Length: 68
Image 1 (cartoon, helix red, strand yellow):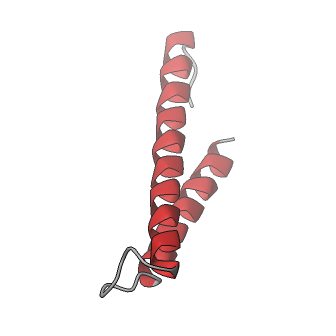
Image 2 (spheres, rainbow, N blue to C red):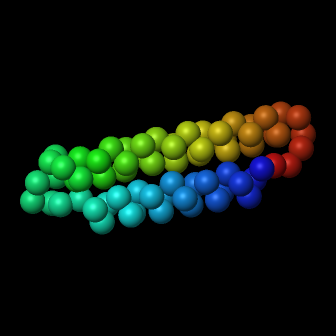
């Protein structure tokens, strides 16, 4: 589970970087640039949720006396 969550975080970060390259900085709210911005926000949300999940699992493991 630990490795899977790390892989998902790397994929979300990779998607953020990829979508950043697709933005047309002259008109960032038109056409494909808007889709890229939405993709960046979605990837950022996924990254944040995965980070919260990892912290939650660490807290649960600590309360039960195990190591995550």
